[in-house]
Amino acid sequence: MRVECYAASRAKDGGAANEDAFWISRAGRHGDGRVAALCDGAGNALQCAGRAVKLFGEMVTSGTLDVVRFPAWTSWLTSLDASMAGGAQTTFVGVAALDDRIVGAYAGDSRAYLVNEHGCRILTEEPCPRIGSGQAEPRPIHERVARRDVILLMSDGAWTPLPPPAIQRIVMGLTTRHLSDVPPALLDAAGAKGRIDDMTVVAMRIVSTGTPASSG
Image (tube, rainbow, N blue to C red):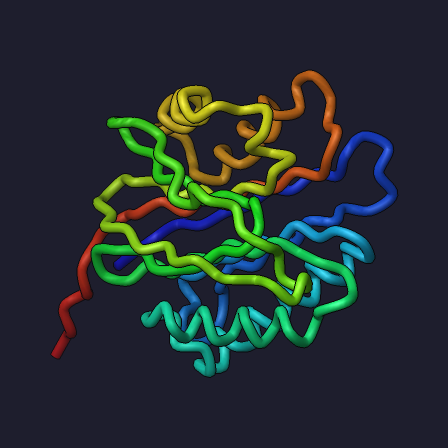
């Protein structure tokens, strides 16, 4: 599978620091942007969200986290929740693009969407306790995807002002543009009346599905 993946993040109006954090695979075993994660922290949030995505990136890059299997996501997130319990909390939403599907997990109210010409569908329908609450119950993301599908990861500062039809309209209106234009366009729309919260968008577009044929 070939994908493109880009992100953009902006702090809330008057904010001293951005409490969101994201990670996209750019090196190691999945170094082609096929794995991405977003965290939205609360409390000592910058440190909390940043720590979570840093640890996630290290696990993916080293091959320690088997992103093909949802139970591996669950085990890691549950362990992270326990280790952070009693301190700052963070949401987590992450996906890996594999052949003709995406696999991932989420905790908290950050969202994943699937966007194409048919609509914009939320893949994370039911919010659940955040990482660090000591009560996190990570829930699965598992979805078939096709060429030109766009998967979005969005913190609540980005998705709250934008209903799914508006998200689809913006994304589909940029199909002839570079994918890197999509995250800032969504942030522009979400913050048009002011940014009351930090906001982050990660956009992943499926370029082709299936496992590339080996050469030689």
